[in-house]
Image (cartoon, rainbow, N blue to C red; front, side, top):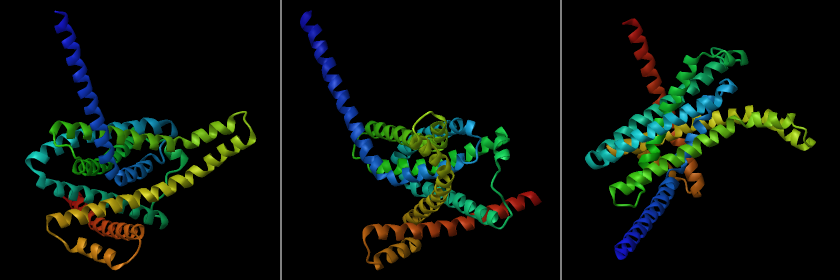
Amino acid sequence: MSSSFFALFDDIAVLAKAAAASIDDVAVGAAKASAKAAGVVIDDAAVTPQYVRGINPKRELPVIWRIARGSLINKAIIIAAIMLLSVWAPWVFPWMLLVGGTYLAYEGTEKVWHWIETARGKAHEPTVEEVLERPAAEEKQIVGSAVRTDLVLSAEIMLISLANIDADGWLMRLMILIAVGLSMTGAVYGAVALLVKMDDAGLWLMRRKAPRFIRGFGLWLVRAMPAVFRVISVIGVVAMLWVGGHLLIANLHEVGWHLPHDLVHGVTHAVHAPGFVTWLIDSGLSAVFGLAWGAVAVVGVSLGRRLLRRG
């Protein structure tokens, strides 16, 4: 009886070691897969703050939480879909990414057009009074737009991660994707929450009975954050156009239209420059292509809306 009892403990110890090894494998696999998707994650972190810019400060963290929750739902749906499609219909991935790239190009181009309209005096940035009086419906619209953009970026993150997972087992790949999704969401929206509350931290430092240099640092934070958010907004739009353009060029090549890919490939190889400069050229050309593709999409959507209104 006692020997059976100790044999049970041995079995439990073996299972525990196997579980620990699996957890280590998941962590290592998630780290490798995440590294390949790091560029898109940075884009995601740059794109998201522009959606909470101009929101009532008291509503910033709740809005970020709603976007983060939407991002987790996005990733759950995407992981379930790509795990099934990777078995039954892997050919559909390029077409999915073409749709996603078109959406990003459309969103980025629409924001560029809004900047142009603002510069011409036909649109304006919201005033403090308008921000404080924004209705819940507009906040819901902002969250919906951010979650839709996150859907495309999350899909690319998950697809890049899946392509760089070395594990053979279906369950292990699933566990690694779940780990990537949770870690990426926490990193992106944690960073966004920190950014949007930086001016509040500066105000808190200014009001403390602290040494002068600490209060001065708080004042600098308060004054610097509007400029920081303007820069982040520009980076976010450029990221939309760059990622969207890159998705379009790469996946048009996959489905049979090689001209955009061959043009970009030819230019980057014709310029004999260090790797970083080549990457900048490639990214710039992708952004230009994304802007051109997005302009066609904006015109198409605008014409469609006019036809619907006439109908």
